[in-house]
Amino acid sequence: MARSLQRFLPELGRLYVVVPDAAYLALVPQIRRLAGTLDVEIVPEQRWVPEMKSFAHLPGWYRQQLVKLAAAEYVSTSYYLTLDADVVCTRRATTAQLLPGGRAACFVIPRDDHPDWYDGAEATLALRAPRRGVLHNVTPVVWATEAVRDLLTHLDGVAERRSYASGVRGLQQRLFFTLHRLGPHRQQRPWRGWLAASAPWAEYAMYFTWLEATGRFERYHFLSDYCIYDIERSIWWKSDDFDGSDLTPVFEGSGPPFFIVIQSNTRIVPGKIWQKLSPWLGQPELT
Image 1 (cartoon, one colour):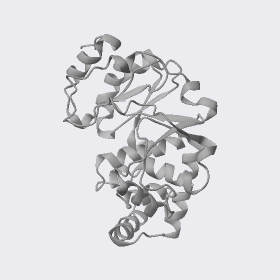
Image 2 (spheres, helix red, strand yellow):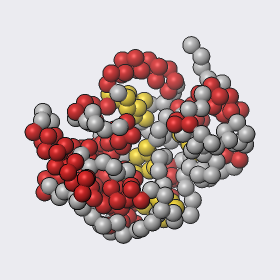
Image 3 (cartoon, helix red, strand yellow):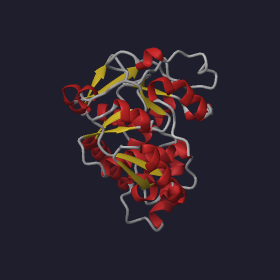
C-alpha cells in the first residue's frame, strides 16, 4: 500500500498509521522504512480510542471501525481517506478526482448483501434508514470530516438519552454501556462506549444511513455510477483466482477506479502479492 501511494497518490497529505499499543515500539522502525517519502504519523490506538483496552469483548474488526471514526477528531482536512493495509492504489489520483466538485463519490450497490449492517446502524443511531436493501461502498472511502464529527455528536446524544434498542442488542447496551459509564473512562465522550456496547454494526452503513436520514448526504457526497476501488477485480475471497487474475487493466488507463483490495482474510502470502504487483510497483525492500 505504501509503495502504491508514493507512486500514484502524489497529493496525499499526512498518512496516519494506527497500530495496537503493544506492538507500537516494534512497528515504528518497520513502518518508517516501508513508508519511504510519505508523511507518516504512527499512532498507538489508545491515543485515539482511550478505552480500547476495556473493549476486550470486541473483535478486531470493530476496533478498526472505532479508529476510522475517531480519526475525524484528529484530522485537519475537510475530507479524509480511510485505508487498510490490504488496499493498493493502482492509478494516479488527484484530490480533484477524489473530490469532484468538492464532494466525494458514493457508490451504492442495489443488493441486500449485508442487511445486518443496516439493522445495526438503525438500532445504534435510533434512526430509520431511508434506503433499504442496498450496500454502500466500503474501504477505501473518502469521508467528510464535519459529517463524521456531527455523527459522533449524534451518537453522544443517543447514548446520553439511553435510547436502548430492542432485543438482545438492547440487553447488551444496558450491560456493557452501564459498565462502561461506571468505569475509569466515564469522563470520556460516550459515543465509543455506546458503539462498543451496540455490536453488530458497520461504520459505513452507519455513516451513510445517518447522512441520508438527516438530509445531509448531498452536502458532502453525490451518488456515483462508479466506485473508487475496482469491485470486480479486487480479491475478496479465498476462492477468487488471484494467481490467474490479470491485473493489467487495473493499472492501465486513467480515472476511477483508483484502488483494488486484496483482502487480508484470503491469507495470500505477501511475497506472492509483491510478485504479482512488481511490474507496476517494483520489487520490495528486503532487510
